[in-house]
Amino acid sequence: MTATTELAVTNTGVLALDPHQTEWTQPQKAALAQIGIADAPQGDQLVFLHYAQRTGLDPFARQIYMIGRKEWNPRTREETWKYTIQAGIDGLRVIAERTGRYEGRTPISWCGEDGVWRDVWLDKKRPPVAARCGVYKQGFREPTVAVAVFEEYAARKKGGELMALWASKPSHMIGKVAEALALKAAFSQDLAGIYTPEEMEREDRTEEPTVGQAGETIQTAAAAQVGMYTPTSEPMISNEQKSEIFGRIQDLGFGRDEGLAIWAEAAGREVPTMGLLSAAEAEKVIDELVRRKRQRDEPEMVDAEIVPDEPRRDPWGVEQPHGVTPEEQQDTYAEEVAS
Figure 1 (cartoon, helix red, strand yellow):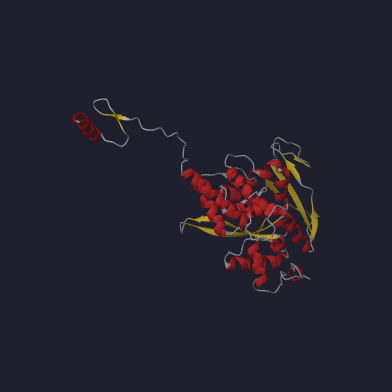
Figure 2 (spheres, rainbow, N blue to C red):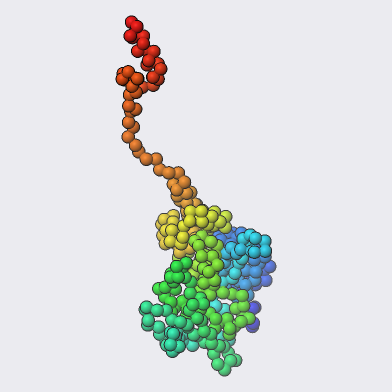
């Protein structure tokens, strides 16, 4: 039996994918809205369906993702959405195993600037320069080996500091990239067009480095792998909400740290990327950004002590009541003198 015929994503339940269906069913479309891609063009959604059927990975269990991000089109001079298909390293392993030809991998090794390969990376002060992994495939005499260079994939902040897991677990992150590259080299037909979040992270950070841009949804896949995503029972943030939040973030001149603080305040939990907000949480974020914009644009009223005006004096040194002009006071004074 070929890999194609036995790759049924699920065989029970209302969301089960039929290997022969040519479009998403209505229940499946409702579920796509929950994972935030219902607004994607019809063509992209059908491509996603094709990949889910071909790989056997369940999109509703978040084994495979379709990630959208905005890109600037120099020809039309406007931003357009571009979608990529992604899966975690576990998903790539599943696809390889289902071919019936996967026979495991070599241990991952790392090297530093000295070029010496090591079985474990113990330097806590510096990340490895590269990682190496080989994949065994039936019918091949030697493993298919891939090398991933750290600087080609590590995601960094604007200031150059490593981001998130790339800072805390550098050997683990670059090791996953090396394994993904080896799997894709060994099973190129089965894994063509599928990327891991670690492969795409640097590209998106380079092109779209500010908080709130659609490119940040690349982090959704990585976060989902460790259980940090919003439960699918809640509607997820829409593209319209993303665009509004991004515009307000830009208008306020906020960077990543300010954005993350606002996400966490709105959700009451740590939110590593805007794409993990629910629709309700996104509304709270928008309200907070509106409040901060209003606070910035409207200067605060300063409490001041009201001091009564000094009594005016006429040319003859007589105090004048408030609100009485010198001319009126002069006429009154003349009348008093005449009487």
